Image 1 (cartoon, rainbow, N blue to C red):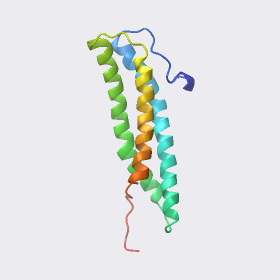
Image 2: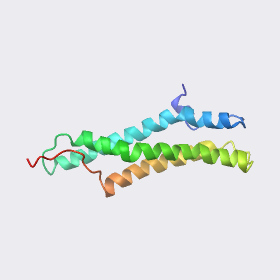
Image 3: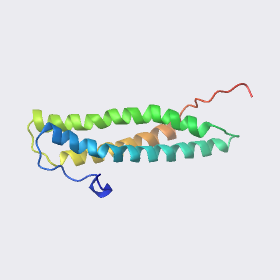
Image 4: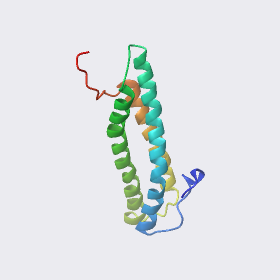
Length: 134
């Protein structure tokens, strides 16, 4: 298990594809926790805002569900893109750049948090609740 302070630690001097992918995959759980916490905070904030306009019941769960589907899946696809680009930089372009992985991870994490904030502030998320005309 990796300590949170080591989340952005530089890559060891490994040049193998497995070592590069391993560096990224060890950090995926922490990335997902960061994204989930941001998603929960944004969902609670959105539902609380809706509560000012009327009663709510299952909106928090439906907002979380839509957030998980619309954010967490693409976020993990983008995360995988991080180590793909890292492999391209180090294997195809043959650039010795031990700082690229931490830099890309930090930038990707910040982008993910800004993306979540942007979606919630500007668009909100649709409810998947069933309205029976009540």
